[in-house]
Amino acid sequence: MIKVILYGCCGAMGKAVTAMAQTDPEIEITAGIDLNREASCLYPVFSSLEECNREGDVIIDFSGAGAADALLDFCRERKTPLVLCSTGLTTEQLDKVGETAKSCALLRSANMSLGVNLLLKLAAEAAKVLAEAGFDMEIVEKHHNQKKDAPSGTALALADAVNEAAGDDYRYVYDRSQLHEKRTQKEIGISAVRGGTIVGDHDVIYAGPDEVVTLSHRAYSKNVFAKGALTAAKFLAGKEPGLYTMSDVIGS
Image (cartoon, rainbow, N blue to C red; front, side, top):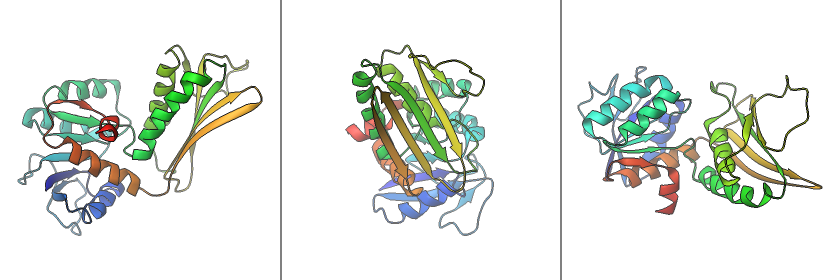
């Protein structure tokens, strides 16, 4: 049985993880951390990790970038494995993630969906063939109207995967409204759409002469991210310090 402390337990994703964990015989959520404590939780909820008196083999984080620093400090000091799911981290916070991973097992992914992480691999493989053949590459992502960061962390991860596979000499273009010029070959366009309750759509478009190849992923509920986080927690429990990704989980 893997004991989990859920950081950000009262948010939408925290509730999704809680519901899915109830059906998983290998997972027990022993405590939650959230400033907005709700009495309806099936486990004790604390306002900070310092107040928490329950043991956990792994912390799953679905809080937000603003809470990441305190969480990383705690995991580094206590050497507690961490599944870090928050997006929109600053460059300084990403550097801190790397430092923290020297003291504890830390898994960070721009997207916890198993399908999206497979898409990352497929997008890179396609880029190796199609970029060399002169195809233009564009990424379009769509999310609900409450999402704060744009483009999404997943879109940026897809761009990085495609760019690396294509020789790492492409630049990213986020907005063409001020560009009165032709599209150059060595660029990857990244477009963001925000509206309604879209959970998460991502398209990687390879447009060549007279043909277009599109790789797509559609998330229809937050459960895909909850399932990925719980799978990652099982993988990370007991692991040596280091920085892991969902690619490690898929390949394990």
